[in-house]
Image 1 (tube, rainbow, N blue to C red):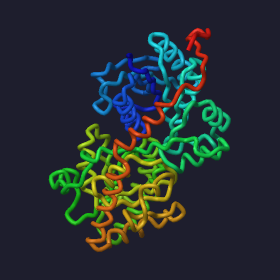
Image 2 (image 1 turned 120 degrees about the vertical axis):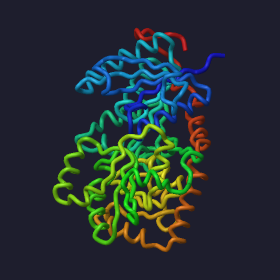
Image 3 (image 1 turned 120 degrees about the horizontal axis):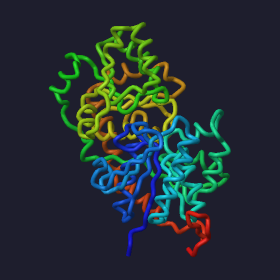
Length: 405
């Protein structure tokens, strides 16, 4: 019996960076392990507009090995990009019809999955990630497109219970969303001693507290508050901010402004650049005395789960799904979003905790990940979503003609 065919649409996919790329690759690989033939369409700025590059199963990044990837070069605006993507989807479906479409993120991927799922007569699954709902619900977001996408999807998943509740409110129903939290490779992201040679190469001074962030640093992750906090902490003790990843280009100007005001503090912002190897990310995370995730809004950040899995004490906000994993005083430190101006004070308090207390919180954080956020839990939720029947009995071919289902 041939494998059911799944087409995933995702805004970013390895080798591109970011949490969307990471989770997209992981879920594509998980769906393949569950018995699906998976193809991915991902947009990229690294190709000329409209160019399509196919990477076969053996050429895809290790995180999604076995998945066929079609990378589509972005135009200067989304309307041209999506029209062209529609042509690519029709061509792929005409070559070998898909049994289901997965939109990773509500827009643009979820919208495209819902529309073409209806057009092709196949199931569409849309997966809400990050601050998807908030971005589209409030001006200048597109509330009508958001609601249409949610109403037309055959199935909806969300990365957190917080997002699921918002979607239930929009749809006027309860319990229709399957929560599929992000998962962590707890063997790879595991506790261990800090790498002294890596610390030396990064230029971290003896006795300097390492405050860490992982991923793409930007406004929604609390970047302005981290800058203010670093200055406040350094007034009391030596410290650096280790960014395991990159600062988003639009935030570079803000970092330059900070450097003009506080040149000595800005010099202690250490940016690694994108790290392709997850093991290298884990080695950097183990250097941290305290991991920071002071998000203004968020889904359920991969980076926070990875830091907790490495046995690092974490301080996060109560944004999005963060409180679903991080509980104040039980397995970490939580600072309300309305109090992020006190981030520096909270960091100093966390660093001043007795060593036994810090170690106990970090161990509890690791235990939370092992018990609740492993790959088996994610696979169980995915199996539930993928196993549902078709939304409608009639089906249409790529030329718009009705065919037997």
